[in-house]
Image 1 (spheres, rainbow, N blue to C red):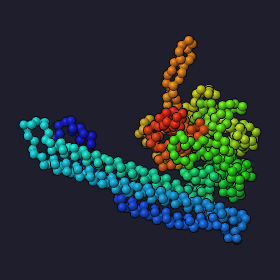
Image 2: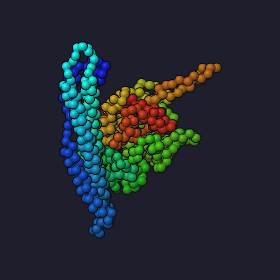
Image 3: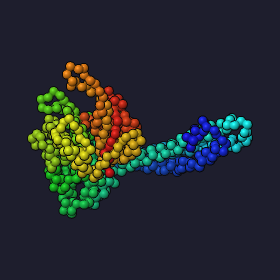
Length: 552
């Protein structure tokens, strides 16, 4: 409608034509909804937040105080752990209610503003319509000349349409923002993901809110929502004998952390015999939290949600970030980096797998368990041994991907194409997420914006999303003897993985060995260069996302 009014500026404008356009514009519905009703619901969230906070303070007092003398030994330890988990749940619920209150209050305010702006626009349109009606009949003597009053009405109609359009966009965006915020707040209710038969509410809470010291604000426990849901599904389909065997492993665990890692392994797709073999290795250390964290959690997630290359989180092992390319070499790379190979697809997908699979991670750090990785001596958990096994795992999957692509391997000059990527998604990510992965093109900002909700939902639930980016680099060709080197620009592709989402930010793992947060707007605008550029510029490096593999 606004476009048609703009076109009238350079064409013959008749009162009847303008009145028709104004009438059509006024038929567009005003932004719907009651800000007052939304405010009332926000107040309900605020009341719930305050009530939960009061109860949480009482619970924290109990947790921080000595238990009655009747509770001693293992019973006291179990009771303390249970209280700690319930207290953690309480804090998460408070955060969820606070987020809901903020989301609804913001929505109500923006909807109120949109409805006022829409009303102002309609008022201008009605005034323009009245002005057109008051104009004297056209005088044939002046031909196409337009009376001044008609041009005034046209300008007023345009202004009114702009206000209505602004109001419609504001109301739409406010509703979308509220939905995203409420979904994020709902993630606080983690225990609801555990739906397996025979799991009592207290056990569900303990599993859902047990951390290992490497937890983050966006994922406060060992188990992601996807891991809990997957483990529940696996347990529900087990035979009675296998379920009883798994429940005994969990019951015999020395700590809630050991139990949570067993559940995480179950969610990653392992059967009961593999789970028993996994627990045989970790059970002697079941009450040794630093050992469990060091050997089972690569600490992919970073709770610093400030975007920018200065806030990169380098993945480390036992506090060490760097490792040599090979024994005795002077060249060093970040430990979890792909090193001097074009295996970014394999490396990024492997690390995404390790973040969801403690059995495979144990195979990397110790060479033990049902997913042991070949390399140094079994049981050797030194930095060098871990680095060698990790690189072996990268290169093994590099070969798997190139085989699927039909490429003779090892071919260190080529990467992995679509068939190889699909093969790695199927063998590494699908067992841990329960989802198949599909390629989705990101050809332009509109396509990226459309893909964003699915990416955010997947990453928030603990399902990694591989993302392919590209950029231009300068190449120097010295292949022609006795000639000056030729310089030209060529496209370079690279794969990374989106591993987290929080508010309007995405956390991306770069297989050069680190994770970093970017804004969703940078993703939409093709400004991811800070992850790969030398100077941290969002427009440098390889800034353009052109494809994602989304779990379905």
